[in-house]
Image 1 (tube, rainbow, N blue to C red):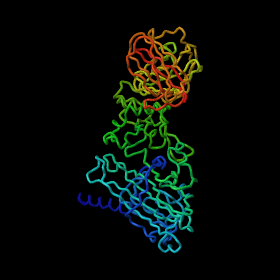
Image 2: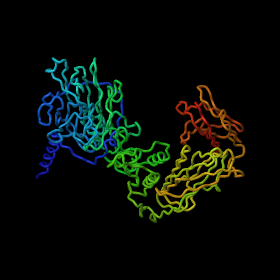
Image 3: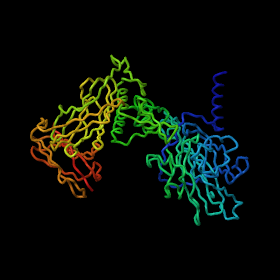
Image 4: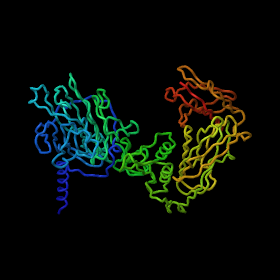
Length: 637
């Protein structure tokens, strides 16, 4: 066959597939992992021009006209889109306030279309989008004598030029809309029980991009209801369901509510008001595709989801060596140290991408058949290996060999643990820096996690960490969690970083390193005694930082607390406020010159944005030249 004939036949096949709504499938995941559900503000916009589906277009399972429970099948959307791993170009519209995607699921159509609980069950219909699934009725002019207003069920596709500069010239974006107008809802005896609502399928803004994303956006819009009398808006289901009926999202809950469990577990909550979920006019339920994209794969190192960011340049989203950065490793460490919320564990999301060593996949008995993912500092270490060009790509298979073409010797990591070397402590004012010492050897990735706890917190408090230049390190003073990641060669006795303690009382105190994990393997805990009495102080004579006054500091609109400090000579001074998570709250001065002797600076209880901080414990840190001291204070409102 000649090449041009093959080309024309190929084009014809594609066109035919689009016309008849042929679906193609890729990897599927739970629908609540593929979408986020939120409520947004947007006033209702009724359809002015649309294709009306006549009452004769709605059939039941015997192919008879059914204005009560009928379905109009194979309605074209006029563009192809991806929903949970399957490509669609047609929908089926039911009188009862839902649509299903793709060609009709075989004939006869589902025998029961008004059972709203089917949204939460494997029963057909599946691949369902339900803005208001109840037991409704399509009224016509023949019902006017009984006082009923004629209904309209109509659809249209809106086409606009694609504004994406990466899209080919002449590209368009589509929005497919189905509207149920003046539908007699839930009470067939009440002419006033009517409502108008829509479902919108919005083509992805990156559909025509160099790195295309065809996952569809979904919106449920809610218009006017009957003006007088009882409108029965109660008792309907609202949400979406996957193509197998194995997972659903109950859209009466937002994804951000209670870690998302109600939206994916709830099978009995029904509407109680209008509009559903919010009960406030001008509110729209939106489903935004998240997680796995065109290039996304498990463990590719993209923990901050750069490759799924539509604002990132196309070449960045396309190339792993550009979308994996040092920020991905830091995102993991901050999450593990709980300075950030835990990375989303759903398939296709942050932890899925960040699990670079493929050790983090697990199951949850509440959601059988689905995988979840978690990250550790060891994953951050793998990312650092990749960034150091010691791994050609991520994910890297287990067990980890350091490629021979990058190192003279292969991976020979042998670790017996880590300890706190209190004998080598450095004292800087009231701050003690205690080295964390490696026992063993490392050639490759190194990930450490542990908890630090003072056993006499009134005399000594853990306040943070200081990393060795070869190491990324994060500490959480509130929880005592310490995490670090590194890549390279480390010898027995190497210092990985320092634990910072506030030892203003000068009372000898014990502290413990517990829950120690190195490269995802457990190690024994250890206990040490830190004694600073008589210890050599690295602080230059004449440097001192006093307790702030007043303390506790009760914040008012005009009140301040004063930090007094002394320096031996004129120096550049920085004073910063930190919360218990180690996050800078306020920079009071940065590198400003102060005269020798006693000085003071005031803090009004506001953060860097000018907002009053919350009640709780904070630290202020004064740095003058080589000297630094950290002091704890209490804030109340």
